[in-house]
Image 1 (cartoon, rainbow, N blue to C red):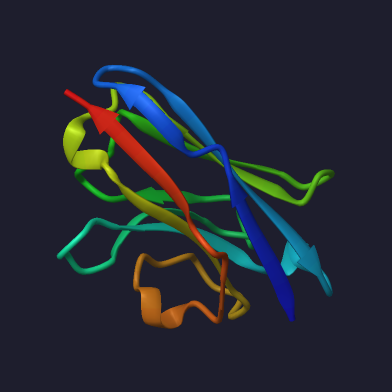
Image 2 (cartoon, one colour):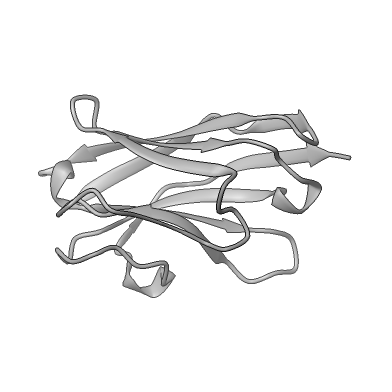
Length: 125
């Protein structure tokens, strides 16, 4: 079992950048795929990006490709989401989640077992 805590959200102007962090603690945090998801008001939760613990492969939703970068610092048990060229439509609560099934990571939220509390990202136009 692991616990996840997100940080780094805030208010930024369109075109700006933010870096979110997901601190993972508990039993063998290095054995979990980590995914980032977001949910905007009135919309369903959507997968943004994930990183596989098996081989370090990363995946991105089409809406963020080329703008967002996911990375992992295993020494700090932290996964980052660098978000550049932010748009007003990126405004949402961002969650990180952990999937303990060792396989290439996926952006299906129902595959993830543990979730953080979320951090708000607001992008002004």
